Length: 296
Image (cartoon, rainbow, N blue to C red; front, side):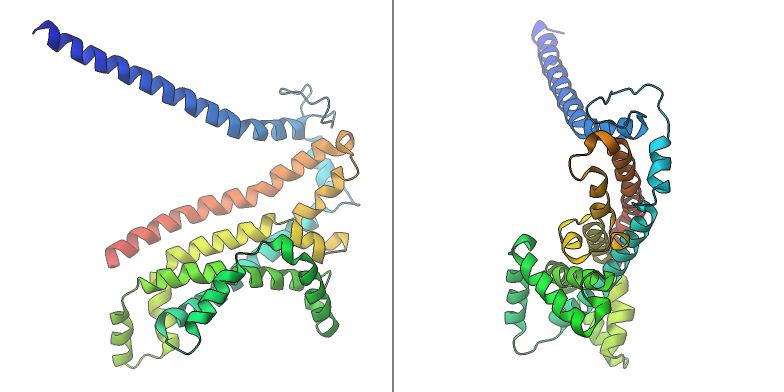
């Protein structure tokens, strides 16, 4: 073997080592940047000193007292906040899937006057951020509460109503695009067999579009679960609060040195349902995409 044949592999091997080392360094920096805040929250929840100022990366005499104080606090009922949040997020997710899927089916399969204008209107509404509608949302829910108190201010029904109004736009567009990818020949074959539009929607379309239903359900659940702005406006009673609003009571008024550990424990416990839901739905999403590709 000549010298030239010996040097070329070594040169490319050296370049490959540099490239691999650089990627590893970038990955380590990225992981550190992402995991360091989580590590600080975990250590703070185990630190008995319950102070942000004196927090250590490895706390001395680490214990679970902050978690006990979190669930045994009578003034700030974290357990009730958690149940409230799960209830609101679950109902919002289910209703969002049902309403948006019916709307998307209508926009995808039917042709009617004003269809294009409605689609554009739904899309344009989503351009404006929620912060611009805070006063309008408050006044609207207040007015609805005069006729239906269970959907007015300081009610979970009113909060769910606001979430549904905000979720219909972008989710209807997402579902409509997915529904358009389903061949219309399936509808025509079902109609020849005597199927109604509802039977086509429920028995043919819905099983095929399960992947987008899972995506919309996950987005809606996480959005309602972690939202702070709208519950802060609608909810007023402490026992009606969600986690995002309730946890601020531990550190409101600059009391970071008094309840930082309890706040950190609540943040970690509150993150568990999201992690579990994401891991659970992830496999169903992958399975649905694979099944849809085979059936298509």
